[in-house]
Image (cartoon, rainbow, N blue to C red; front, side):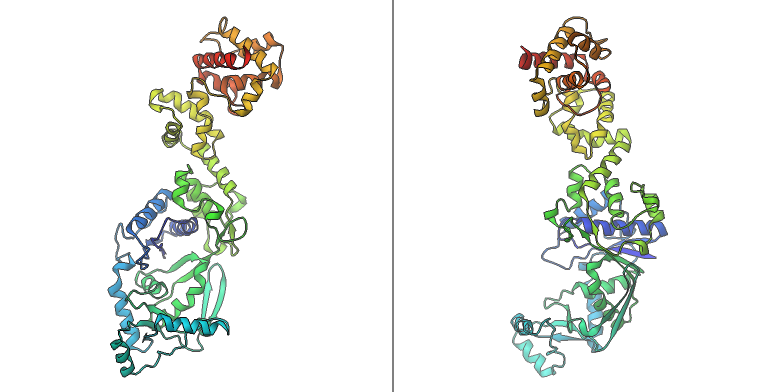
Length: 479
C-alpha cells in the first residue's frame, strides 16, 4: 500500500488540506504503508519555494510523517512536478503519436467566442475544430506565430466507473466531460489533470485519499491512464470541510491556515486529533484520543460521506483538554513566550515557582495565550483590577474588607501566616461571610473574580505582593 499527499505550494497549508494530510498519515501508520509527499508546482506564477517550505514546516509541526519527498528523496523521484517535465513530455509524444492527443491552434479569442456561443445552449464543450487539421493547416498556423496547446482526444461513448471507497460506485460518461480537454498549455507546461495520473502510476501509488472536490476530475484522469496503459489507483474522496453556514470553509469563517493555529497557541496534538475526527467517530463516541489509538481504529470506508462542519468552539475545548494533560515542563516551555509577551520577565523568577503557577493556571487556558489574562495575578506587584473587580471594590462591603485587611497586614498578619486563616480573621473583623466576603477578598488580592481558589493562589502570590495590593486598594477605594 502506497499513499500520497500532493499539495500545491501557492500559499499556506489550508485546514482542509491539513485534514487530508493527517488522514493519509494515519492510514499509512495503521497499515505500515509508505506515504509520499509530492509537490504539485506547475502553477509557475503562483508557486514558490517559500510556500513549499511553509507547508513542510506546518506538516512537521502537526506530526505528519512522510517516507519519500523532495526533502528526503526516494526511489520514485523527483518529487516536485516542475522537475519532471521531461517525463511528461515523453508521455505527451506517445499520445500524439498514437492519435490520442492532438495540437490545438485555437486562440484565446476564438475560444472565448465558442464559450459565448455556448452560453445560449448551456454548458461549454470544445467543438473539436482542431481534431483533424491537415499538415498544411498546421504549418500555416505555426507560420502565423500561433503556439499550440495539446488536447486529449476524449473517446466517444466510453463509461468510467469509479468504485470510491467512501462514496461508493460513481459512474461517469465521456459524453459529459466537456469535450477534448487541454493537457499541455501553449507554453509547454502540462496541466494537473494530465500529469497527476502519470505521477501516481510512476510513484506506484495504490490509494489516493483526497478531497471530494477532485471527484469530478477523476474520469479525465482515468481516461488518460487507459490511453497510456497506466494502472489506476483506488480512490477515496473525503467530504469537504464546511463552516457553520454549511458553505466551504474560508477566511470569512475564521482561521483557516495551520500556521495561524500554531501562532494562536493551539497544540499540534489537539489539532491533529480534531481534524482526524472531523467526519469520523471513534468507538464509544470518545473524542480525545492519542494518535496511535486513532490510527488503530480509523478505516477509510467509515469516513463520513456528508460534509463535516468545522466547530471552532469544540476545537478550543479540545485544545484546553490537551493543555491540562500536557507534560508540565514541555508546557512551561511553550507557554513561557506568551508570559514574556504579556510584559513579564520569566527569567527574573525561580523556575520551580513559575512551573507551579502555570500548573495552577493551565486549567483556565483553552489556548496558550490565555495565560496572559491571568499571569498578572501572580507576577505583577499590583494587578490592576479588571472592570468587574473594580466595580465590586467600590461597594461598601468590599471597602470594609479592604480596611480590615490593611489593619491585619500592619499587625498580626506576617509572611509566615498570611495565607492561613486570613479569611477567618477578616470575617471576624467585618462580620461578612459568603460571597460578600470571599468575592471582595478575591477582587482585592488578585484583581479578578475568576481564577484559582485563593487557598491555592495566595501562597504563590506571596505576602509582599498581597501587602502591596492591599495598600494600593486602600488608597484607591477605601480612604
